[in-house]
Length: 351
Ligand SMILES: C[S@@+](CC[C@H](N)C(=O)[O-])C[C@H]1O[C@@H](n2cnc3c(N)ncnc32)[C@H](O)[C@@H]1O
Image (cartoon, rainbow, N blue to C red; front, side, top):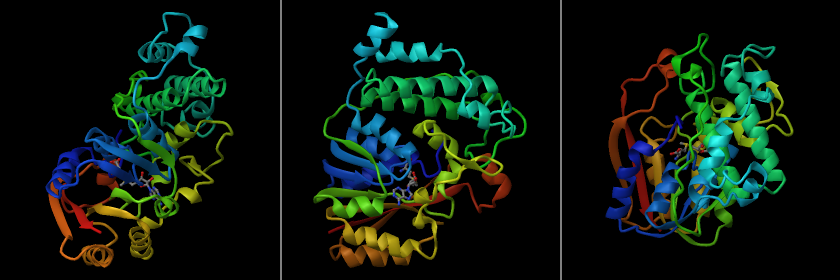
């Protein structure tokens, strides 16, 4: 999914650095997992991973791509839907044929609603409603176990993102339909990564990390600028959470009224250094790797000071890689960046 800070393009770089430092396998914690791109790559590399995020969106991705280790058993559903629906792929095909059922997304995020928000066509919005409501019902009725539920919710969030009438983030919608938004919603089953022993939770990193048993690798990828994720991804977050109870919305683009517990102090120039230091100080791990953008609110010297204060002498190093930044069209209209090519850094220390 299009996501600010998504590390998909940097997975080789991260893997290469870990390899160079002899960090291979063991237990890893990714408490800012987002799309779970790094967490799933660590799982592929043989780590047992704990992936977490303060957003339900991150938790849903983490469950599908990190905790789940095989395609779900859909026998209970087959009992109800008929014997031809005998695999997760067949369930996805059935969901893709489901009739639209106008609900929350249709009422609030399509032009059919009173606020006329053009995030989805009315047809796609009502199909998102139908699928998300049915998944919630199947889960509540015990017809779909956890892995299956999160895999299918992930498939829906990703499918909705492909037809969202945005320029990449949900902070605003485009005032005319873009070609992608006019395509029909189409779910694809996420690819499960085999390997048992990995877990997903929704948690605030600051509460989660200090309570963990000693582990090998802490991979830290916090927000690096003042953009708050719950305001940029409120609609995928609502789809991830479901509509019961229906979230209370506010403002022109329908942000969630109650999202303060999901807002992050890591986005603040004033609070960022202290919360990073608190996180590093409280982690009982052997290695720390911190992804951070060169333009982030916490400066290189501050990060170096913090990592050296809690790490072993001589093991600190900052690896650098230039790459093409993920940027939304909205960014280019509203913001001025000096270049498209940015430098991503991986700060490492052993403890
Ligand atoms: C830079 S993104 C991570 C991107 C991720 N590595 C990927 O490849 O998709 C930062 C993530 O941190 C999450 N976050 C922010 N503050 C948090 C906190 N205090 N605890 C846990 N997650 C937090 C955000 O919701 C967001 O998903």
